[in-house]
Length: 391
Image (cartoon, rainbow, N blue to C red; front, side):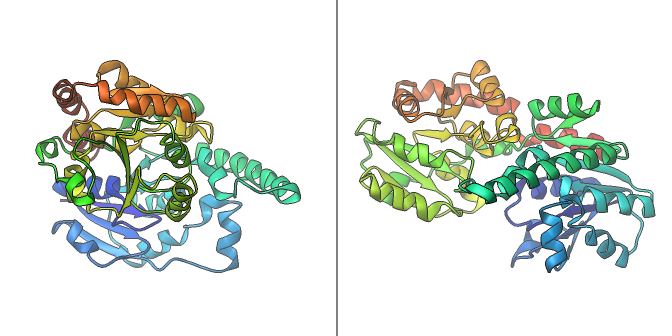
């Protein structure tokens, strides 16, 4: 049986793309995962063909300097950790640009084929390393540093891609970006879809659980409460939605507390409820309990936000509920094919009108449309793509 070395510069327990990918790989290969930040229960995520190698993160001044300069060197120590266990590998699966350089070092030593899975346009996300509200000299310094990182990061990625055997990414729009930027052909697209079989899961009675009137229209946001997701706009839009709309935000993240304070400041606590994230295995049961969903990518923040696809799009689709989404290429592609989505501009009034318009969708027709969409966009089809790479 062939062997795969998987590199991940982060925790595994919340990285559903990597978890699902590894479970597909383990059907055909023995898989070793080298990753950071182990958590209790990590071993329960995989079968017998997967072995976990948690790595202690490097720290100190050198690492902090690398993170904000030559960032693609920050995790080079992962190669040393792999070499300590030295064994033959047929493939190396590198998850994102941060681990591509150590993956190349392992490739040179083992002769393995290198698969680069770019989860986003990493170079275009570097602005997220710096605070948005900086002023004066700090803002000027951050701007210079960002240009430095983008310039050298692009040069490094271009050089390293020449040594990559297979290239995987997350959407057709991102694929087209890489193809044009680096003149790279034969890029595989693996979407972050749920499994098709999950579309039949029964819903929980979320309205009863939260004490929401059953006649209210339950609008759901699920996922990380972080920057770039339009969350303050969603909150503010509730000032203008109809009285029978109740907005539920399910998840956690760095913005949760500030969003709760914003809700209180705007006197919207009667229309907005926050609940904790639920286990992945139960997610679609909660999603299916909503009457509608919402996705707002802040497409002006960076190109990666604009060209990517939020996991929530597929989750709402598989749950069979209509949803509001930002004006972005991949959202537009789904809205054009299937009558399950309303495209809105990222301003409060337009978002509110879009949310109110979700009530006009026929639930039976939406479920039928969503079923057709889920038959096209599902993990089973993505697994076929992965299998062609490693078989």
